[in-house]
Length: 579
Image 1 (cartoon, helix red, strand yellow):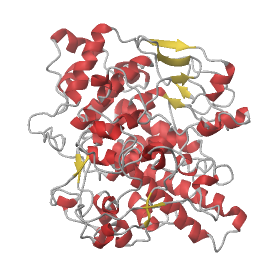
Image 2 (cartoon, rainbow, N blue to C red; image 1 turned 120 degrees about the horizontal axis):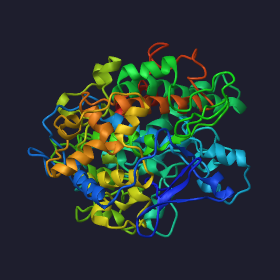
Image 3 (cartoon, rainbow, N blue to C red; image 1 turned 90 degrees about the horizontal axis):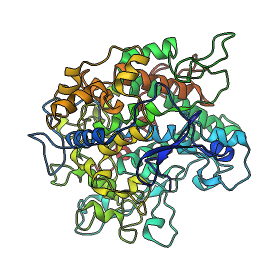
Image 4 (tube, rainbow, N blue to C red; image 1 turned 30 degrees about the vertical axis):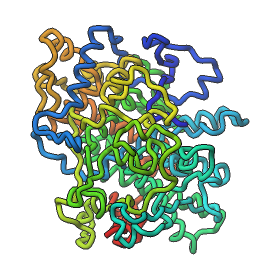
């Protein structure tokens, strides 16, 4: 099972950063073979100081503060209410962001380690790029199990109808099974958990129902593109033509729609107009060496991208703060009907973290039993995309719903909803995963903060200096703007924390002080890594700046709502089948 949270990081030029048997960070020098097989991380900025026992106590206190509802929170749904407005970003972008993360960190060699492959193929498979390999795997020739009989279209799955007494049993759609509304499932194995696994290249995309339905939308998008191109494209070229079309439209959507919502648009525009300044900057003529600071590398044309640990371990964990504790999911599961789609239920109705059924006791522990649950997504749990994305952007009034039925993300800040205090084991690599010191290790904030110590991540202050960004003041770090309260820290602990702030917390505090968008350190890291990941894709809007979208309303517009409209044929009965 592919793990969502890594136990180690291979950083080029340093070795494998991991923990010893006592939980202390160590560096392991890999063999030549192991080095080739490891996912290729790099270090953008300076090395940070290790976490000592005093700092570990501070981190534990801060992690608790980040996942504890302030006064006014809703303990039943886990919806944080920290006195600031919601972000205004439609909630679908939270899980689009997770889908993108899995695209960036997809290990394309996982299932072929015993095969005879070249070094070049291995390195390419470890290279982070925005090329949708989490959707396509290695293509229909090498991964035919993900593809339909035509060898070009992607497989999708069917739902299962619900019986009498189930929520929404009187809904005509909910009562029946339907093709194309669930991920394809394996269907074989010794346990129910084996049988309900998603038959997709990256099973992390079935970690929760929201990201699973996002993956399904991309399956539909590819298949509609295939049908559109089939009449004008030779059959031998059809798959590559469809994939190139899908990838470029996906990149355009990320550049123009997703990124400006979560990152200061001025930073995005600067990076995509003027190029990168800090991460894997193209070498000037005659300058073929290494940067003098921190080992950063000037790249040459054709060099494969790496993944900075500052992005993976800190900056791109912004989405954890955007998660709601409960959602207005569809016509059956919402507050008006008395059953909102809580975060626990979104985990439950998945195949990687859940059981595709309600947890019998209502506890996250039920999700760890491989022998209970169902095999397919029940029809009453199909997403209503009108509740996750704002179709008024596309002037589709017929697909625009009332504000009370719509979901927007929580502001990007230093607070997480309290269900993230305890995650299902499936989010750590499957129901057989083992987690030490479970009481705190299942707390997402604690894991994020301590992982930074394992890889000796530079502090927020160190990265601000390196990226030439004005640092946050002590008062800004400690007080923030209606985010996590650090009042439980003693005076000397506050002073230590303000001088050496963990990068993930620092970046979230920056956003909190910037109306909920990454800026400064976080904004620069995310924008530059996205730019490099697009540049490193075989199909690339960065390397082909003249390319323009053809599947949106005009030749310069293609948003996530346009992708969904194309994928679901613009039909309400497909985008919101439960009504």
